[in-house]
Image (tube, rainbow, N blue to C red; front, side):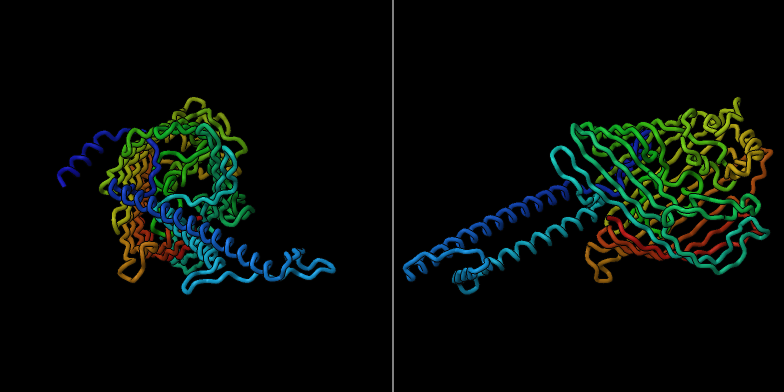
Length: 534
């Protein structure tokens, strides 16, 4: 225990901004890895032996058939005429008598059928083992020469009950309500192509809310105005599209559109990666959810335990900053092109304690000039840089599974941004509300697998869980900005998560949101989610 504590303090002391998160699950120990390798070797030997036995049976049966045919020739005094069965004017050739089968010995047909069933069962077992270990059981589309193309993805469907109304800006808060909603949350298609010399590409296409279309929504943060939203009626979005180069086992270079190495949800995005029916509210409400950007990224695998990443990407657009979601709305995508005049840098470092199923890390994001990415040059002398810092951890050991994140952020020139945004056009679809200088968010969840207690094997995970979310988008604002307590929120979520082979999931949970403002009532939600990862 003293050794573990010393390791933990050493790891936390060296955690500097840098690195990419690529570990959705804890790695097995060296002993477990050796046992798995031995099992794989033994299965390969058994399979090779069975193939040899089948070939030997085929050979023996062929020899028996030839011997019987020769015996028939000798008895008839002439060689039988072989004709095509069913040919005009010619009778079908008589079937050769079956070779005698010793008592307890399988026929050739039975042997081949058993081999096919064994191969199919082995394939299914390989699939389950892959997904259960967090690997991608991609289905292969092309496997020719130096090029391989595989595909995968996931789907998420949500049914919700809300005990509160949609307008949280009314006096006394949203008020009591009793409404039901059904949402095809997302369908994601992933493609990965491996070429030659370590080159390859990845693409991820997301269909949100059932596809494309346009709807009207009421923007309550904008005093109840009706706004036409294209993406809210459904959206088809390319979340990732990049070319990569692998450098043996020590590094990887990316160029294109990829997930930022900041936070957790960009890398725990699949529904089987988190326990609740929804992604953590505290992270998705403060920074862009599943944050992706255009740029370049380099990932360095220093050791089996230490992983570093450095990224240069396009920055945020300060026209989208506001009171409720802080900088989340600054993620560019409203226009046909994405501006990169104001760049940003990201660094991350992650350290794994392999023997304890623990990963800890930290990340940093710095945007140099968020005003430079505005649609118009309306703040030429205001840079409005932004700094984000996080600390994160993932725990996956035995029956326990959990993760957590803390984010702090600071925006310079927030007063100037707020004053200019308040005068923007209604057609720009931005909040136009005051943005705070600082914001914080934190979440943590923990689940315990009770599969064997209810008679389920290792392919099933049945996890009662609990999650806590906290965020304040009006944290420690400047003196002239009212610290509105309605933007400080705590969400408690508890429920049950079931997954089969880490591929099919069903989740049921209850969420209770508490708002710091004393005149605003608390809010309740019940969610039922189901879907699959493939």
